[in-house]
Image 1: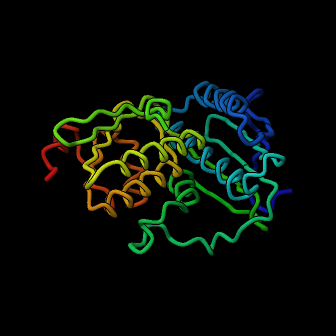
Image 2: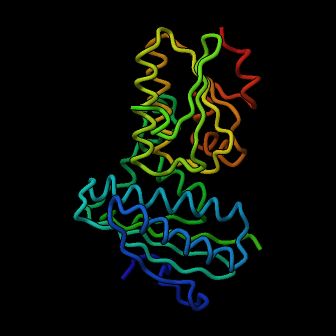
Length: 150
Length: 119
């Protein structure tokens, strides 16, 4: 059970616009198939191109972080994505099988001293593009919400 | 690493190496690694590299792609070269602004505008 108010199970979403998928590292066809399902659901719910761009960016950052940092590239571990879409927005939860991380320990990538560091921008991009992003302790689950401006 | 097999178009004219992307989406981590490797080899083979990367037709990129670009920028800088970015879609440009990487990279509206800025 999540500790947040974000409900990624999709309660209240239209039928067929909520679900859960387990993704394996390197299984690009499965990832693309899942994303296609999400994009179709978003379009059917009336999301515009800019909104889909934002959600896609945040979702892919969360999944990539789960594989790369959470699961440390271990192909035996998976990332589970749960989502719910309705006309007012989307909820999304991404959970890896790692030990988690402390989001307050991630350096601010926008500081001058950190601009040349190649990594560490995923979480800030999620926060920039989604309405709310929660890192659920111990840090191996991220819950996000996107509210449409309608 | 062959640039084309990494999803890159590369050509050289008047001492400036122009790089473009074949794929519309620069998201897949394995592909980003290949792009980074190919650009790294390209830079290693040049003295004071002058490189223009065009993002024409690129619709999506990830923070991993930004990381690869930062590594390219660092390598070009270590060889006292010049790197320019151009033709970036407004939505992609917003990512550069949010991350403040628009201050790290020299970004121009078009390739033509970027080309005249090389020394």
